[in-house]
Amino acid sequence: MYEYIIGKVTFISPYYIVVETNGIGYQISVGNPYRYSGKTDQQIKIYVHQVIREDAHSLYGFGDLDEKQLFLKLISVSGIGPKSGLAIMASEDHGGLINAIESEDAAYLTKFPGVGKKTAQQMVLDLKGKLGELETSEVAVEAMAKTPSNQAANQSLTEALEALSALGYSDKEIKRITPKLEELGGQQTDEYLRNALKFMMKR
Image (cartoon, rainbow, N blue to C red):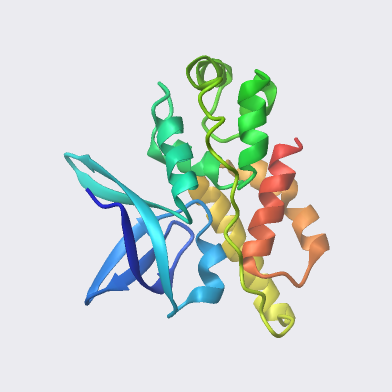
């Protein structure tokens, strides 16, 4: 079982990143692939969890050990698989997630894709009182030196919308917040995605 991988980010898509080490490229699913945009071809350390099934061997990646431990807690809940767990982690508001579980705020939890009322209640039942040891953490994103052009900004918005779809949000949900993202303008993909996830949680 892998604990972490140290290597260079060589490819970024809405669904995963590729980290190359010792001549091998590892496809790693992460909640927000574009937060690694400023680290392309730079060496990073990414914590991973491997899921082995009959039809696939998958790696899920996290910026630090706390993120990984929170993910493992989430997928221990009945009704939450790795993809749903990753979508929940993508908002990066881990403090808000933990507070919602501790305060039994099912309404907040059902805002995540793939989480219905029953699953939200199960999250509270299984995890309340068990997340106190996990500290919230953010992965720093390096700022770009130049403001993106309109063309680059449009590409960034498109990539962010594709990433939302990859996380499991419906076309209807995505279309609802697209105008709000367009009003922001001139952002990197990672920034668009972070704001999009905030808008999703306010619905």
